[in-house]
Length: 146
Image (cartoon, rainbow, N blue to C red; front, side, top):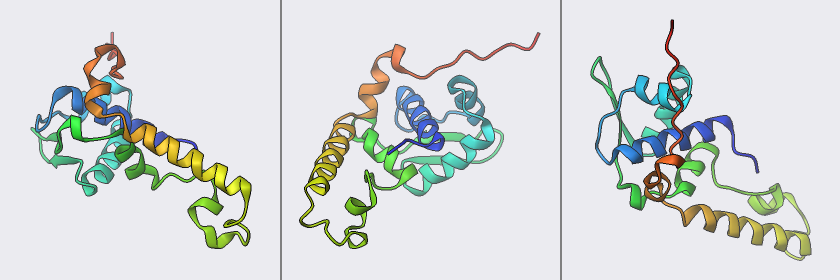
């Protein structure tokens, strides 16, 4: 399993919003500039996050994005799986019908155990935990144009 660029950017965006707090409207430009996410890519990611009811999108000149859930109740796993789907390490775990021996295969059991551990690890970390330490917030300085 490899986290996609969209997944990485979604995590950055969500940690930034978690740092601001639930319901706080933050402009797309502020998020893009401070998290090093291309604005056009952020707009696409925001659509996925909004469809999953993690954020609200307000259109217009004074628009932006706001977190719909308390950061304490939102796990890293939720954000990642919104972007990449449910985590599976290989096809035989995700779709056992693709493997004729998956029920009796010793390697299958290892893959499944690793999948459970990874999902549990990500589920055990809230966005509030990630946002509470400012050095963990993925903020990139905006370069001035001189």
